[in-house]
Image (cartoon, rainbow, N blue to C red; front, side):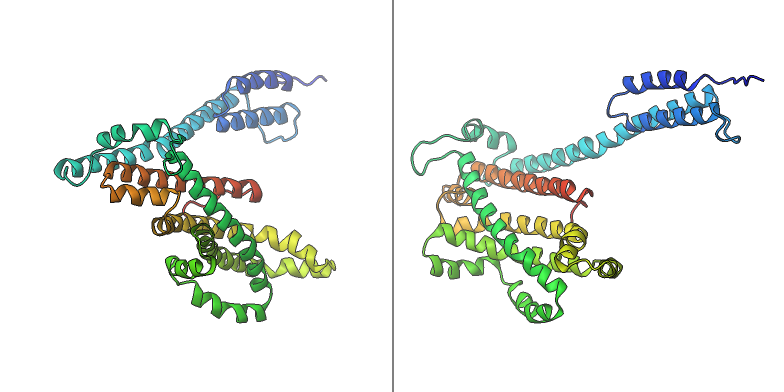
Length: 336
């Protein structure tokens, strides 16, 4: 006896739902997922794969409506968290700045005055008008170059040493006291030593960045290596996996979230330190620009430098967090 079914064929379901999937925008991910789920359930019913499944077109339509509602909720949540709330914070900060500048106009400019007086820097960030007269873009690049050189050198030293500490108890007992003594030393305390060693400002600034970039990365790497589950290592030993393969196939992937947390902290500290170092050593850089404008009592340019420093730090942290996601395939934790 030929079986009859009240539900349409799977191909009909596929065509109908496929059309809906095409019409949905990329941002309607929950709607697409639920629509596809409806198609799969309807197919199972048609084929009698599960006698307990009783889904008709009304059920699938309900799933699709719920999916679209979920997509709209997700968009609303994304808009509030990514756009609305941060914008409210910035507007509140600018309003507070404007109020303070209104009551103490002799001390600081308001946001509009700061903007108009720095239009030349903003519109022409890469001008060259002589050896010591460069646009703020060139000054920022000079500071970034010092930071990245010192930071990368620090990472090249800190990560292997962190692995050594995490893998070897004797190495941990030998190096831990040295790390705990040197880690609390103020970064600027290294500046006179570096000037005595190198005699000029450029390598001295890079050396200070190098020293201050070590500790967070080193400690977090050692913590990550030491936190690898012992069962992983036991399985590798049972399989007679060589030590170097254990490091690259098991320990390193498991430690990457800790390593990237240390790298984010080290890069943030390095960016903080370079501004102070450039204030003291002079030369070309965003820190020296800030100090020089203060000596000229040009507070509008001081505020511009502060904003540029803050935005650059935010971008650096965002870039390294995106790199963490690409390498580890895990989302970076906010504030880690």
